[in-house]
Length: 433
Image (tube, rainbow, N blue to C red; front, side):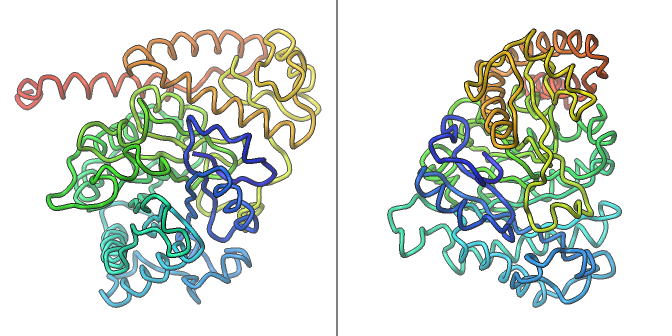
């Protein structure tokens, strides 16, 4: 799954690892992105980013203010319970805006809370249920009348959570969201970089994502994914992102439904940053990562208030599994890195870093697609082993450039996934522990 199609030709989009483009519903490049997806026969997710309603109107951006679900005042979801009527009206407006704009993957509205397990999360679950009801009333899975031959549309439940809250919140989130009759889940990780790269957060997001994928769909659920006509390989290969910049997502074995496992539903993780590859290697169905703004924050950066990608774009290099030193101070290091480890993306001279914004974006897109392919080449246990060896080599190269080592999140994901697989293989032993 790719975030934003601005400035890209449809022929460049890596269809083998990405079946859907995603960008904010209020983005100024929305119409161009929709045109690209149709020419490339891809799906599109238009993220409503309803959490912007929690900000004062003047901090949301002019484009968001024009959306039909933009609230006149800051939304205080932790102040008290929403009424069923208010939840229905809000959910209707968010869903209708996505479908009217051409989304093939719709998502439930999600918000950010100062604490988990309280009235705020209860309100978000009420909004998710109201969106599901509206989805069924409208038969939202049906393709739009003007394109009756399109694959069925899908509905994902969005879980937006601050990284620092996640370790303690996993049991409740897993229990309550897995009970929702939706086609899949979209996990959005928000917080500062130091928090989101901690091993505890990596363990928690791995547990939540793989747990949701393993959880059976509620009895009687008849969505597109459970019917085998959507994310399980018959549709666009839907995935969504709430992050920014270009992203790459891959399924572990041909289609998000396949990655989720028999009878399971796919999960897309946004906001993990560079260690998204570790999630893919360990069997998470899809991730969103990117060259620009791949780690969303709340409140969002002012520069991206209208969904427009910023000017400066870091240069990714696979030899360090991250971005090369940027700016004038990092020029010598960038030159050495590409000379010592030639790039095979094909978008610029192999022995030199890409020059200019467009070349850098094309380079990053090619690299991220290659990372997604590499992370999902074999079975999770083998992919984890291969990635661990790459991390070791990358840290050695990073040391030569005086860069810090990769965060422990890279190894924490695989360790957690192995523990979960062991517990699943011996449920009796796990239950008695």
